[in-house]
Image 1 (cartoon, one colour):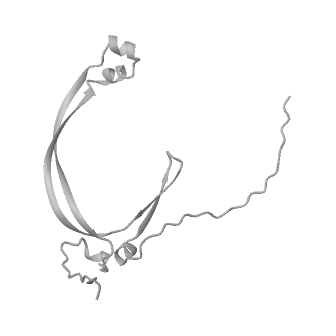
Image 2 (cartoon, one colour; image 1 turned 180 degrees about the vertical axis):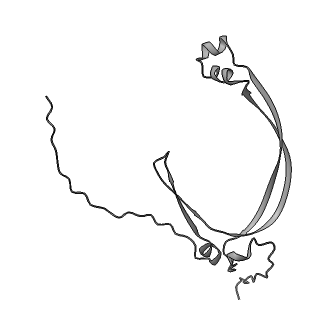
Image 3 (cartoon, one colour; image 1 turned 90 degrees about the vertical axis):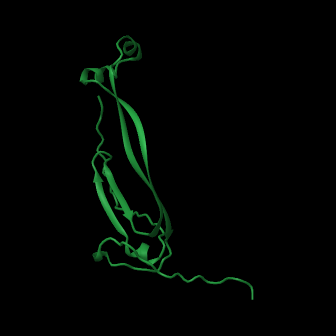
Amino acid sequence: MESNNIQSLELTKLPIGISVLLSDYPTVRDGLRLEGVRDLMLQGMIYQLTTYILAEELEKRTKEVAFTYSVPKNWWEHLKCSFPDWLKHRFPPKLIQYEVTKQVTFKKYATYPKANVLFPDKVGKLVRYKSFIEEEESGIY
């Protein structure tokens, strides 16, 4: 016969946290956004920290990419895919092959994380911004 021992525990709430060093550049600092989502499947919270960075589009090219993939013909053929190997060898699942062509666009950017320029959020997406950037001359005098 098992004896059930009931014990009393005193629990304390300990504060925990995480710190991340972010640059103090205005574009990065003023565009920060933190979102938290509860994930029921993973039984936890997912936090996403996002910001903006100024960039200049240098190159944009589009290429057509073709690829093929196979899927089972129907639900029964899909079920046969989970059979053991010896049974799949005897009764192979029938597959349908599809060939798909997609257009993929590649973009190349020059980024300026230290740019000291602020843009208000309410004006919408920035289309074009031109500025003169001063370069310090370095040399031995």
